[in-house]
Length: 122
Image (tube, rainbow, N blue to C red; front, side):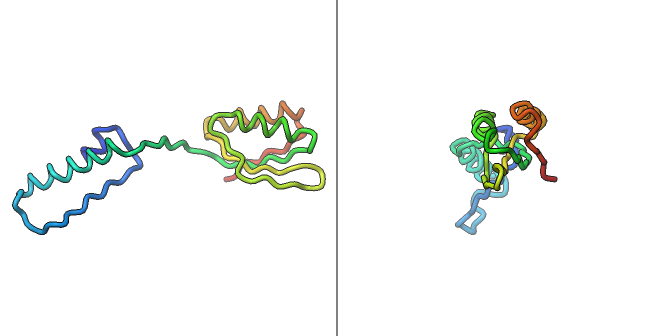
């Protein structure tokens, strides 16, 4: 736990497997060995920032689709997960960082002059 806290990480697990069954190091030596190995692995591991996201469904007409897609793709952290077409337009399922969700909804509404329907998943 000290190795994780020492590197200011969260949402991580470290597994150190011991292949030798003896106690030659003593309990303190084992703790130091395990902690040192965990810290070394954490230092070398690739770090990935986890961002809480929300899912939203955006329904828009074909005339608005290209602009809406371009602006959503330019929004940091937003991703169009699924795109399907209807007789009158498209339905996009997007994930967007939680802190940008309200701004994304306003942006899409402004781009389409309120014609797009945006619904956030619970």
